[in-house]
Each structure stands twice: as structure tokens, then as C-alpha cells.
Length: 364
Image (cartoon, rainbow, N blue to C red; front, side, top):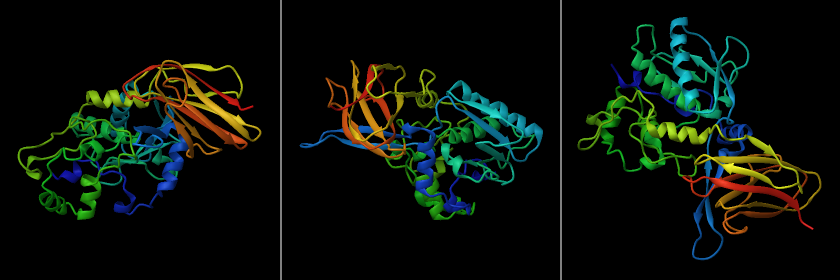
């Protein structure tokens, strides 16, 4: 039994020969789907000047969305097992997986690429041609053990909903004592180049490219790591269950209490809202008919961060603010041209919840 048959081979166009997707196309698909796939995270103020921030870029689907899933091939018995396990994610994330026999679909599953299982990550599926697979299961058969179905299907659908490999989590830095030369030698037997190994195992996502938790060796998104490939005594077994952190993290990304995108009217009464779930981001949309200076504010007891996106492009961040409003509230003053704009509101502390109001008015 080889490890290539037993680990997820993520959808990596550069290393697989599939057509490459540009970073710009990937980011555009993500922000067209969900405004808060770009989130501002305050880093605190330097000795002098304005507070600094990091930009988190994610590939989450719109909260509450129904994702259509279609099998491109495969035998009915295997398809039925994959579908049943995939639905387990609906109890964790505020999403619906609707399996369809024909027509358009966001997630398309194949079994044709033998020996490899992989998936696109979240909204990257939208950049794949409509006739091509976005997910592959290369070794599932009617005789495959249930625990193996659970392990691989839970893992690949984790990718499909926006999760990355846990060992590439920025917080994994220094957590796994890899014996790199042994790892290179081991995977060379599976026809992986050193670049493949670097890209799939050792290369971490940057701090500003993904929302993440502390490193979780029990995550369903973690590879098995044999002791023989590490320095000292360190190993990770085959994770087949969702970890407590997996569940908490994905419930934050897809909260059931979120109202979705709320329309704001310029100059209207303020809108009351609540960040009911730790890590929740609320999104608002408003249209500007005539150019002018506009004031966007939050008010209330919560320490909020406000981000302005647009015009006409949810992926364009125009401005953000943390504490320029009343107390711990945010305030943005900006001359806006005609077009569509979005505001996103989050609590400064990812662990906190609280109420607030938000409003937009024209200056003067």
C-alpha cells in the first residue's frame, strides 16, 4: 500500500498538468461569491501612525447557499456511499448539498483518475470548465472499508467547502519535525518530485492568505505522518473523524444565525444587528447614485472593524477602520463615485460576540 493512494492529492494545476488558474481569477471568483472572503484583521498600531492590518483571503461559499453536486462517472454503489457521507457536512456548515443527475453543478465528482483523490478548494471550483471534475476519488471501490470512505470523503468535501490542508496551516510552522530528506526519498518512490513534496507538504500558506486556527493534528484535513518521516518520535495517524476544532471553525465560517447580505439605504435609520457567533462577519450592500462624501459608521457596545468594498467590485477594498468612531466603534469617511458598495462588519476579537448598529449617510 502506498501513501499516494491514501492521502489527498490537492488540486494543484502546476503539478498535475491541468490548466492553471490565475490567482486573480481565483480571487475574483471568491469575492464575487462572498464579499467577506476578503477580511481585514487589525494588527495594532505602530509607534506612530495609523494602525496596521492584514488581509485574509478565503474561498468560502456564500453562507446558506445550496451547492449542486453531480457525479460525472462511477458506479451507483460507490456514488451512494460518497453522497451519504458528504451530507454530514450539512450538520456543521450552514450549507445544503443537493446531488443532481444532470444540469449545472458547482461540484463535479469523478472516479477516473486512479490512485489520486483531490478537490478544488472552495470557490476555486467556479474557475473549472463546466464539463470537468472539481473532485476525484481514485481508489474508492464497493469493497473499500467504511472508515476509508469516511476519511477521504469528509476530507475532500472539507476542501470543497474552503478548508486547506492542516499541515499547511500558517500555525503549523515548527509544529511537525519533518526529516525532509527522508520525506523526499519516500515520495520519490511515488513519482513525486522535490517540488511536488515542497508544494504539497512543506509550503505553508501565508498569514494573509487564509483564516486559520492553531495547528490541529487531529483535524480531518491533516495527512497521516509516519514516525519514519520525522525527527525523534512524532507521528499522526489516519484521522477519520471531524475534530472539535474542525467543527467549531467551520461553524464560524458558515454561521446559521447570519442574516446574509443586508441592503442599506443612504440616510435611512440605522440598522441594528448582532454578531451572534464568534468569528461572524456581517455584510451590507448600498448603492450610490451621485458622487459625494459619505460617512459610514458602527455604533454600540461592541469593538467592531468596518471594511468598505467597491465600487462595483466586492474584491476591491477601498478603506477599513477599527476605532475612529465613538468609543470602540468604526468610522469611514470617503468620497464615493456612483456605483455599488459593500460594508462588512466583524468583531475585533475573533472569540467575541456583541450587538451594534450600522448606517451610511451623505455628508453635508
